[in-house]
Image (cartoon, rainbow, N blue to C red; front, side, top):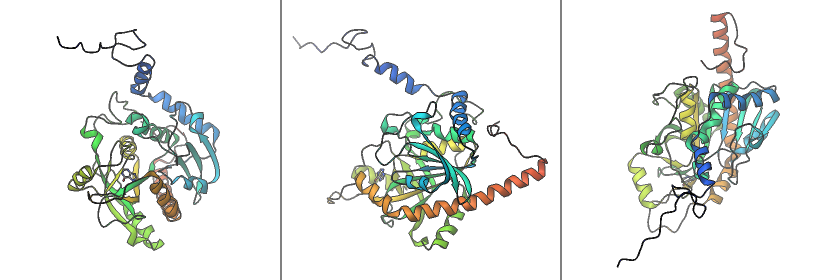
Length: 340
Ligand code: HPA
């Protein structure tokens, strides 16, 4: 007689639920799937607005090891994620875990010092929910930074890649930060993503890089987000290269999708922190310590680049606001009225 197979756990037996999850984990799973509604996002935004005098139109997401930028803000107010209603909490070394408002180059900004990744266990919509909070705070322009492996063989460690496009691998597999109920107050059900990475902002960044004398270290390229937390195999990297990918990371794409959904203008760049190993003979390995070390070494240039971009973007936003003011004869004062 064939040996009997182990019994599938039955509801309530041995602490398991019917679908095999331990009691308690089922509750967690259903919470992760439960997207926040407009009202919850509004509560997060109002919490920040009620505790800071700043009214930023520019948001910045600081990637691995790049959070030092937030320290440069003047007249800053800091909000640890655990204090903001409905906010997840960052669990990665090198990610501080707070929102900071303040002035950069005299322009009011809001910075995410530390972000959320799907490898921490968060659904894609939750990784990107702070972008919606920024929108309700008043942000119209988003700067997204990340650390990435350089797959394009012409890239060197320490180079900067301005994103001109991305490949959304999770989207290929049926996942999206916009999956589920669509609230039209944020944006439309179906969304075009060509021109996601604003051409004018990319040109602006190239001009800033030239003025800084770092243009030879700047590229424009295509980014891919993989789920992580593992770095890629040689075969995976060879596949990605065939697909036209220049840099590989574990973030950014959900945030950019959600930002475009609510009509933000987006500028994003990757710091190339390590080389992607595409040779079986190589004994080199990607590791988090190298990522953080490169980010620390290149922090000054990155901070300068972002500061210059904010100064230029601030002028742009001001002139758009004054054109609108002249057109309408009034200026919109309501902090949370920037959605339909
Ligand atoms: N792969 C994926 N994510 C990364 C890498 C990498 O090589 N470097 C920094 N983030």
